[in-house]
Image (cartoon, rainbow, N blue to C red; front, top):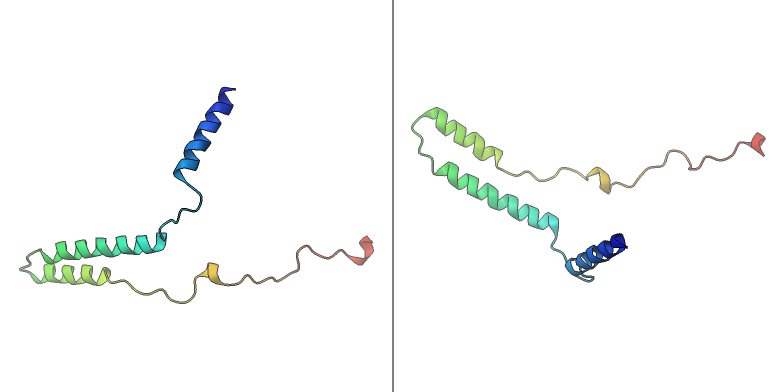
Length: 97
């Protein structure tokens, strides 16, 4: 009996948290905004460093180049249509009836 009461309680809590019809934010858009904000903060901190040597300037240039985002190349694999090489399930052999 206690198991049923506990299950009903947690299902009610889950229903109250995740209500039907609630629009969730686009995770990819939120992720890209967070990455852009993080890269901007890092770039500002790197630019604030005073450099007197060529090695320090080179390091700053390498880090600035690494922070550049590159666009995706081609189509991701999960967007490609599946190719079927053999029929599934295999047809029965003639001798099997």
